[in-house]
Image (cartoon, rainbow, N blue to C red; front, side, top):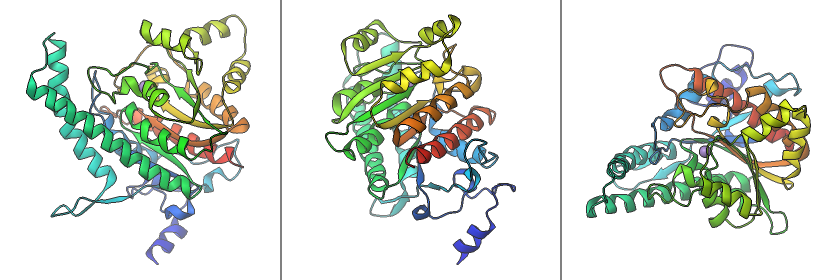
Length: 362
Ligand SMILES: [Mn+2]
């Protein structure tokens, strides 16, 4: 009953109410075509941490987002859910929210990871204790991946679109695994990655599930991936460049190549069509916020000059949604910093992705 009253009271044009859910939406998840899953995990972030606070900051900033999209009729009545899966830790801890469990595990793992990163940056060999810590961080990463996969599989099996909110970029793994497993053999999944980085390293600083390895892991450890298309990348190593050239399943639209084409007169529309053409019918979208111009995400872990404008990214997302089917998506690497700006941009992008993912199924 309380739920019904809350539902009736929700006014998309009114003042948002902070209720701990994305966009302040009070709807039960079974009414929502898209459910957002908070994954506040940032154990392996190398440069500066803070993305574990992303989901909460985005939830807070999302209350202020206007829910109307001028190109999508009824967009302001579109229902978006917030995952509140409980997991049973047994004993005194009992049941806790999955997101709270992940956050606690992230804090614990990050401490161990920092010891390892510090040791490596001093050029020393990790001792026995640090090697044990490393294996524990890798195990913790695996349990987060498994949990995210289970949660996302649950929504996919109900015909819903899960949207994971990170956290560092490694949070993508479980979501892509669930999305790929939901596809039949003959309708494999394509992955569209917005990012400043290629994320194709084979492990980084000893972390098997590093944010810098996410797409290497997606390609090498998940079945049913037909293609990976990268957009906006501008900071990668020679090995990663080789991987792109060697691996027939990867197309990279680097920031440099995009800007060059635009400078020489090609339209963004035509470039977007080339990007979409590389993708199969069913697509997972992984959006690392650092793919955007860093003025839109100044506090993200590894900002790089260049990158897409907000509207260029949304234009591409609209084209993907109109020509392909979006199975699931994520937004990661949003770090709040001292202002609400990064989270404000993240919340707006998340709203567009949720709306467009649902549109793509119509
Ligand atoms: Mn990334």
